[in-house]
Image (tube, rainbow, N blue to C red):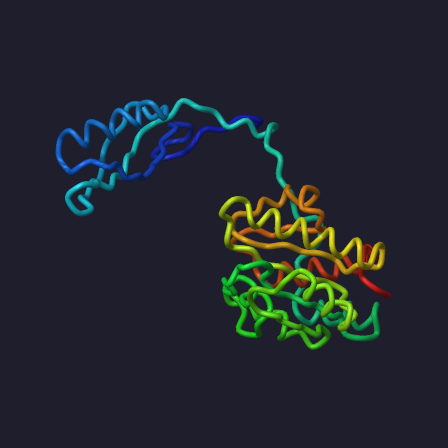
Length: 246
């Protein structure tokens, strides 16, 4: 099957649900505007199943209806995980067997980004989504530099720690700051360390995993990434010997 349609009540009925806010006071005219917008989006017939005024000048809508569009599965381009997910014990065992020392991970938020929730979810022992962070892994040494780390500071600390991997988190995206900061970081590591640079990993809710080449990093993780995924990738990178010191 190379093409599919959304599923609502019956297979292939094309039913979808979407929500949006219009800058109009609630009332019949606002609902008419919502229907018009839904029709222009290709939802026809459409039903306004919920509307709610937000103050006196805005209305929130939930619209339900059918679309005729098909999803072409052959045209989808994504980054699929090419390595197995490992348990903490398996990660520790692989690192111990291959490196015979701890694998050093340095992480932080670069530039003016002060949002540490993402990097802390991956690095701190409390973790995310029921998984312990990288600090929990016995064979990993984690150095969390926190927020607003300059690129020179990151490079200097990574060299001092003899880092095998560097993780940077970027949440602030105004004027493509997340892209520019990450490109600056990857360029600085290549200039300072050449082929002996650490594995470079970028993460954040606005990153697309397909952007790794554009950013100059080895891997990009998007929203919802768990510590186990990152730890398993570090083992994969170690096996591939791409930037991880032996």
